[in-house]
Structures are given as C-alpha cells and as structure tokens.
Length: 191
Image (cartoon, rainbow, N blue to C red; front, side):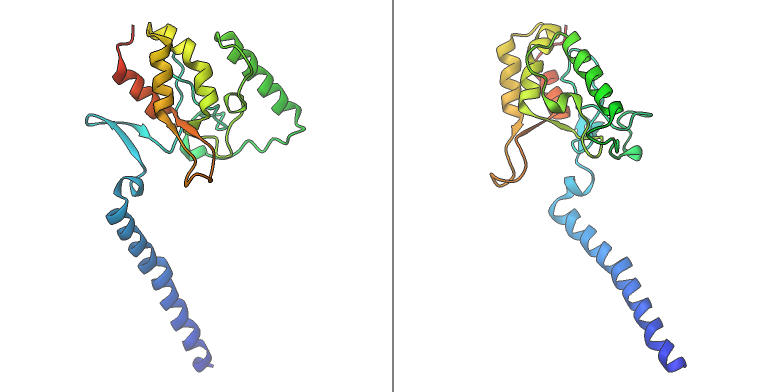
C-alpha cells in the first residue's frame, strides 16, 4: 500500500513546489525585469505622490475634470476590492431605471447630443479606467468652460490621449481618464 501512496505524495509535493512556488516566482521575476511598471500595478505618480493606477477607474466629480464610466461597485464606488459586474440582465427594470437616471444626469450637466453608452453603463469589472474618444469629446465643452480654457485646447488634449487598438485590431480606441485629467492639470491653470 505504501508503494502506491509514495508516488502520489511525491507528485503532490513536487507539483505544489513547482506550480505554487517556482512558477509564480519565475513569472514575477521575469515581469519585474521586463515590465516593472506594469508588474507593479501601472501606478501613476505626480511628483512623489501616487495619484492612482492607470488600470483602475476613479471618481472625478468636478466639472473641471473628465468623468469616468459609472462604477458597478455601488455600495462603495470605485472600490477595487468590490470589483464585479452588476449581474443585471438586459431586460432588468432596475438596469433600465439606472441607465435612465444616468442619461438624465448626463444631460443635466450641460452635455448635449447622443449619450455614449459608456457614459451611462458600467464595465464588466465596474472599474474601467478608460472611456471612448466620443465620450471624452462630448465632455470637452463642459470641461473647457469650467477651466476657462479654449475648447480647441481641451479637444487637442483629448486627441493626444486617444490610445489606438492594440496591434491595430484588438479592442477599441480609448482614452484613459486619469491620464487625460493629469494632462489637463499640466496644460493650464484651473480657475
């Protein structure tokens, strides 16, 4: 009987060490050597102060800043520990009510035109740091007015922050809201 258990125990210990220790340490070491910023969470700093992560959305409520996508972590918005979708189905009345309220809020904040879908719906994780270029373009007039900046200057910042599709085919063009707002702060005074 022991002759049958010994190989099983040996394989369990071997693969625990291999998959639980050696592999994670090797991948972490390679990531730190090749892509240290990404391996450490794509932390964004302003001087020595950490202002956020380029991978996690944040709440920007002032009209002087571009707004992020809505957060699905409703009890504690933009909390990465509560990440997850809303699990509301497409036919859910609660989802329809949430979207209707978000559309109304969007329009009451002085924005006009068709409302971009990403302006009123959360992402699958509820923490998407990016918005569509169209969403950003529709916020230009409001942000420019709040900052007393020419619209063309704010629009140029938006266009400079548009990230293309990965390898030209994967994903959609997008704008990282944190980086855009930091570029906005760097571009001019907020009055």
